[in-house]
Structures are given as C-alpha cells and as structure tokens.
Image (cartoon, rainbow, N blue to C red; front, side, top):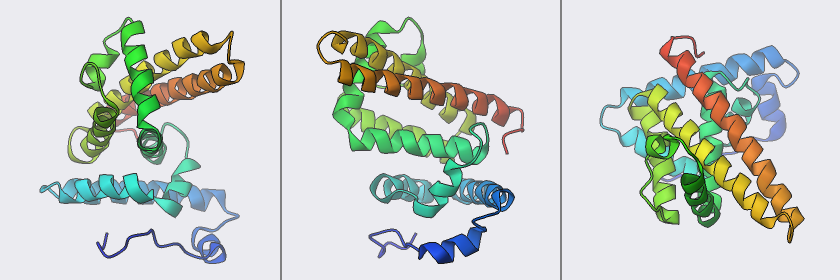
Length: 209
C-alpha cells in the first residue's frame, strides 16, 4: 500500500459494478474468495511482518473499502467471511474503545469460562489495551497461526457478548432502549463467535475456502 495514499482509492460505482459483475452473484463470490486468498497469501509471505503491520494500521484508519464490501456478501464460514468478521471486530473496537473495554471487563467477571484467558487481554484491560489486543489478533491472522487467531477472536466475542448481555439487564428497567441495543450487540457478537470458531476448525482441516 503506497504510503502517500492517505485515503482509500475509490472507483466510481459504475466502474466497480462492471469490474465485479454487479448482477452475477457467482462472479462476486469468486472474486471475494480470490481477493481474500491473495491478500492472506501475500501478507503471510512477508516474513519481516512489515506488510501485516501496514495492513492492520491501514484498515484501522481507512477500512478496506470495496474489497470489504465483497467479503461482506460471502458466507460466514468461508475465508472472506472470516476475514470480514475480523475486520468488523477491529472496526467496532477502534470506533468505541471505551464501551468495548467496559463490556469486555463485565464479561470477564461474569463469564464462567476460559475465554478471557484465550483472548489474552490484560486484567483489567484499558480501552487502549483492548484496541491493542484486537490489532494483535488481526496481526496474528496474517503472521501466525490463522486458526489460533480465529479462536482468540471468537473468545473475545464471547466475553464481550456476555458483558453486553449482563449490562443490558442492568439497563432494562431504566433505559429499555439502551438495553435493547446491548442485547442486539450481544446477539451479533455471539453469532460472530460461532462463525469464527467454525472457521478455525475448517482452517485446521484445510477446508476453509
């Protein structure tokens, strides 16, 4: 990624539609899988780790733009689907690290499992440490054991989902709107956890495509 690019390069929508075949779902699926595989292979091939560091920093600041839009349409338990969920997790935490840290700490206290240990956050974790953790997990997906990175992300989602559920209960009587938002967030995080765990199993079996 050229360092002089401070904003993501955006194609006119008509041009992009022509590139991916807007009315051809099969072609969109093919390109989603191809771009995910190519990106993962290219970054993992750089043993220095520079490419992974740049990718993590770039996506935290700019997102992945059109490629991510392709990944969002991929089935959840595929390579592009798993990368898309990792990206969404990073985006959510960078957008609101304070709430993320609060929910994580509440979940760590409430959840009777080893998920907090698997995720690997400090105890207790500050907002800055939660941001650093999700970046470390994403970096691990490109530099280390991809299955382990998926497992850590799934564990993180389970801890946060627990925190969101218990916090929603606190708000139910006084702020039902806030409680509903937190419940929705908990359900979404639980779904991500299930998908990422399944993707980890598939990766180890050589079946995550």
